[in-house]
Image (cartoon, rainbow over all chains, first blue to last red; front, top):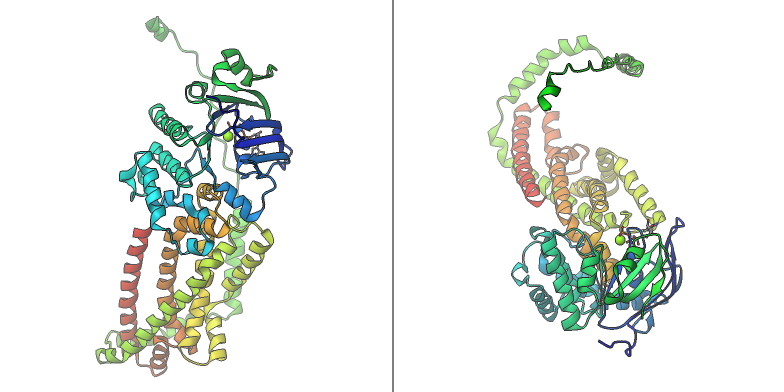
Length: 260
Length: 273
Ligand SMILES: Nc1ncnc2c1ncn2[C@@H]1O[C@H](COP(=O)(O)OP(=O)(O)OP(=O)(O)O)[C@@H](O)[C@H]1O
Ligand SMILES: [Mg+2]
């Protein structure tokens, strides 16, 4: 697939993140992602994977550098502009982050909240079209029959797929997934990963995901980004990530190898 | 192999250290002495007379005997003030809880991140909670005059303090995950509260409000004593006239009503949580 001609959808330029306590989260990150890619971020625990994900939609502010989403700087965005940029970026979390006491439909609908004026949302006035949209998202993850179930009645894998449906209902251009399968069993894991892959291929939504499993990264990803101690130490297509490279990402050795 | 190991004489284990004696709790002794001393001293100070209590015991049994013959014909007079009492409780609870609901979010640190704002409004909430009910009632009787309005305001303030405190503590213990999810979806602070916080705590709010209502029904019977309306006014009158037969009837009726309300309310709360 040749995607390099298109405009980048996510662009990190010299991004640094230092936490208030002095911990370095990200160090001089340059990263360009094109529409339709399925990019897997790997690295040791504490390497800065979550920090990278949360910088994209600015759940975390970066210390210096610039991040552009579809050519607009989210780093500079203020107030309403930031909110409308976040609307285009769906996010999936390790712990699903659903409202457990609410129905599946309610949870999925909250993906649309950013599209309404506040007063309508305070009154809970979702349009019929959006309810339909939420239902269609649930169909896509094959959970249409659970639409009126309470979220906590579902299994972990089902809850994660509900959260995928929520992200889809947002009609995003990008989906960020921060260890979406860390709390799931192997079979459910494939179910969730298949759903993400399907969304990527059928809807052309760019996926930026971080995983702890190298096998899964190779199986599902189109490109791998290796992070070590806040640095990007590898960036290239899955095929170019041989065992040696992977070992280097997960070790202290310094084999900086940046692919195309 | 194993067998032979078993037949070998086991080495004697090293002597386990003996359980040490519990150290003598000097603090506890000191506190006990202090408490007993305090009790005796306050008894002397307030001139408690046990002898007098025993001497007047006859009077007590007499009242009790009178109370065993409730004046059933008085029921018809009790209904109206009783309904007024319940109305006071309902309205007072509704107003207090209605104000407590938004206020609780204002003082929850996971909703409002500004420490000055949460600190200030918490301080106000705590001050309000320290004022005794009867003092409030007496105060509002003086301000708005004798009648149920004073009672309603008192109950509203009490409910506000209680529900406000319990509810904001519930808000602070919610799962933060949905907040993050809503923020990531481009929701603003209002929308986050509405869709990530409220659904998690609504059950608590209704439950605490019902609980406050239970307390208010009981409390409002007493508020009449200082002129704040309801059945308490009648209770006081009859006590003043030594009509213990009527008093006992009122006590019975109040008891029945409180029992029913408590039962219904606690069942509802169980279902909610
Ligand atoms: N809020 C924070 N304040 C201070 N330091 C933080 C904060 N969040 C993360 N860090 C630190 O930043 C570094 C990167 O953390 P991050 O969560 O991005 O790692 P990760 O690669 O996602 O790890 P894991 O695989 O365990 O999730 C770590 O050293 C972590 O301790
Ligand atoms: Mg992480």
